[in-house]
Length: 80
Ligand SMILES: [Zn+2]
Image (cartoon, rainbow, N blue to C red; front, side):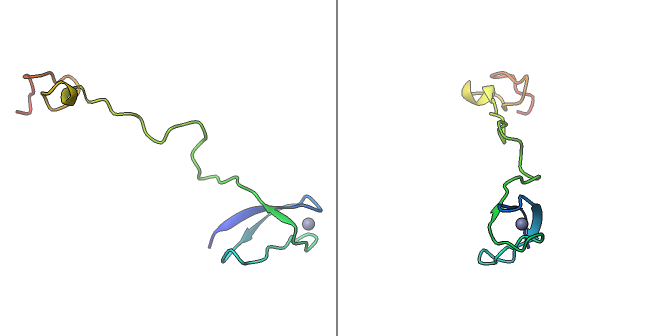
């Protein structure tokens, strides 16, 4: 059951609410209003502006030899 952060529009009261499904009506616990806005501050989300992965360089593959490990050159692979 996801926990969402909301903010009441009329009284500007921030609160958290458990939502069982999308059709649930979320009410402000302070003024019992239904004009609430869902907040999108998810703590588990990765910081914006950072990539989820780094490009992997594999010089051994592009040069047609070696095992693509760092330090492994064409024709001089220790794994072979
Ligand atoms: Zn309210």
